[in-house]
Amino acid sequence: MNIKNIGEQKHIALIAHDNRKNDLLKWVKKHTSLLSRHFLCGTGTTAKMIATETLLPVRAYESGPLGGDQQISAAIVDGKVDFMVFFWDPLTSQPHDPDVKALLRIAVLYDIPVAMNVSTADFLLKSSMMEKEYIR
Image 1: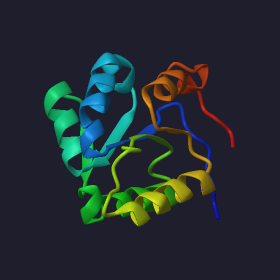
Image 2: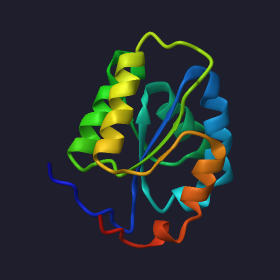
Image 3: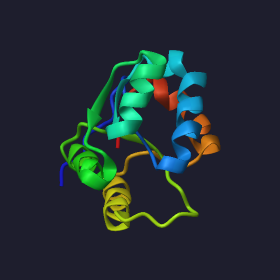
């Protein structure tokens, strides 16, 4: 397993379950200027919604249930995602829960920062580590 350093410009995946999409969009709008310094991607509807509402360039993968979570996992393995904001819905069972668990497992295995709620996302984005290379 080849784990690379995280560069000054982060490759950030933005993901949200249906009941959390508005929370993520609100968070992205609040931090548009900071996020504009980095490379963004996300799953299906979430990526398109963020790109449309904020005009930030966001590479869209497939929707989560259609394989997007697996595509993000593969991007982590390939070193193309090194930071993830995933606002998942803890109160609703998802039909693609195994894919979600696999994505989270890959994120931990490849040692990337993961925020699952607004507070953690704020702490990570405002960290001094966001402005410099991180050596793992």
